[in-house]
Length: 204
Image 1 (tube, rainbow, N blue to C red):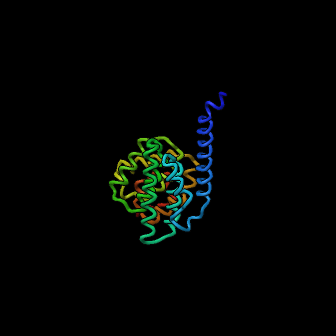
Image 2: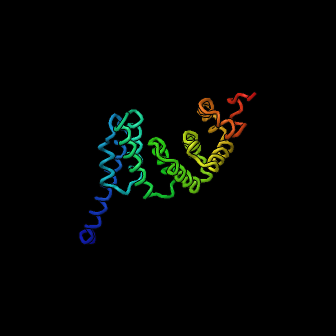
Image 3: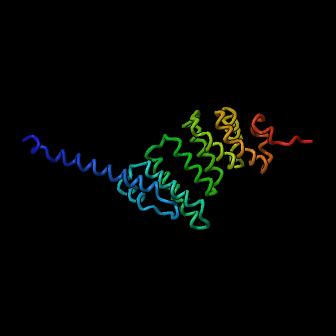
């Protein structure tokens, strides 16, 4: 009798379980799809039926980025803009999660956004995660690529971040930093000397 009386509760529970199962399956399938196109029907569907799902939005943004770096012209720009919009939607749902802001910084750099945009995004990341070491590799890499768009205080902050990064992170970055020094000697005077001395030629 009790089961009959509350049948609707069980129905709601069953429908909820089915809903979350479908979202999970579509998300997994979407992540596995090759970025041969900017579109991803699985992730697009999840973004429609589960607009609250920040992880799905980021997965779709990452798919767009993967396509964009192999594309050119208008296709590249459109994919990057779409990815940035998806990332901004994810940020609205999890505004305090610094990794989403790092993804936005990546898209803004690739889109060639003005220095003020890059600076504002880096300020946000610094405020949200002053000591989050999981950010270090990508944050330092993006900051060095955007170096001339950063304010002097931001450059000093990144230089200090390099110096205090974990040993394995500094080791992984060494090849990239060497290339940056080779392309622009300004890094010899703005990055920690202990990091760049073996790449910088002494001035006569």
